[in-house]
Image (tube, rainbow, N blue to C red; front, side, top):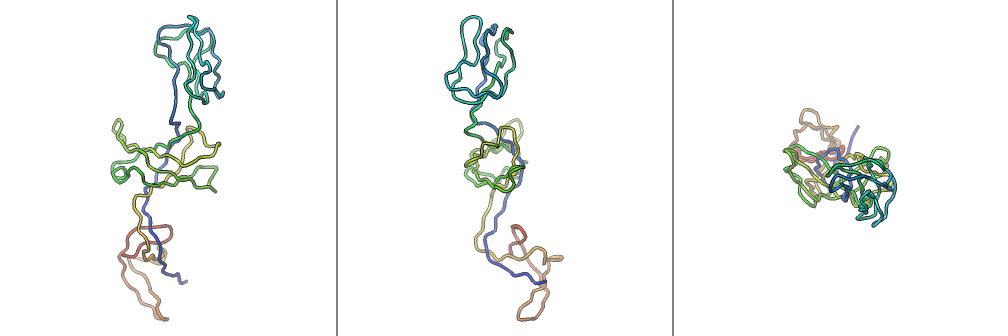
Length: 212
């Protein structure tokens, strides 16, 4: 069959899988060895800013610094907790990042402000967008944080997203169908005449490849 050569933009992207995580989280910890008298927080419960998360037998308490959802509760009322141990964790579900770990070659091409597309299993019919907000190294891993523009309420912390981070874009390029290329050559049909010619190609975009 014959396929047309077209003009259009070509985008180079880095593909990866990222994990959703809350931007704001708070861990309620005991400052000293303490007994827990009340633990109003329950996993999955919504807590308003200022409400009590933990009440200690000594009369002190820990209150929520912001409104959110209790994601973890590690103790029960009546138990004792050592200094520094996490009693409960609170996250803010109104703002998420997507964290992705890249290899060195890919991480060197990612910069703050680059655009990204993301999709979630179960929501394949909808594509979400975001931007790169941080690129850094942590414990010999090269981490990228993406800030989604918006996410639906069914997307929760810990879910994974398929990502495409745009690292290069060229506008109005000549694009040749990839399926037409065999061993670096293509059969061109012009004015009814066929001719096999060699091609030098560049970036791939979908079913087309850039003609250099």
